[in-house]
Length: 105
Image 1 (tube, rainbow, N blue to C red):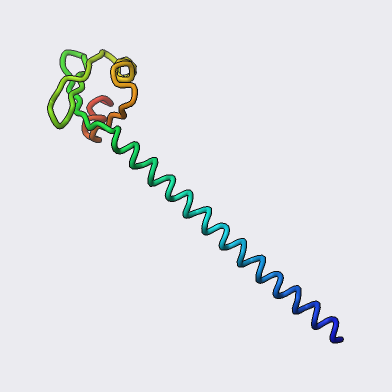
Image 2 (spheres, helix red, strand yellow):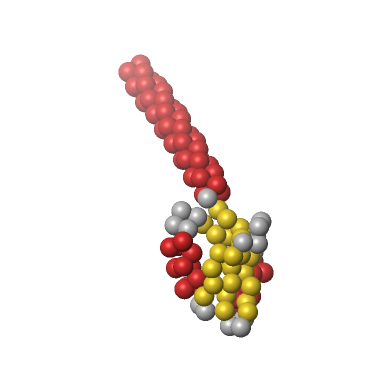
């Protein structure tokens, strides 16, 4: 009977220790992933350029929002995207929801 209690106690302590170590490991892994996501988000934010879109004569014109500098134009959005990628390969462009809705019409 003493052996049964002893082995049950050992099993319970081992189970608790294993559970604790697993939780600790998972917490460290999640913290590491969150730090990496924050770092990637900061990198993306630094390479993001805010732009505005204008539609004139069936053409799409894009301008830098801060300076109103001309960035490019095309007849189709996919063509404009290709032009911008070739001119600014490391830059991500962000436009407002209203500007994107202009393209849907």
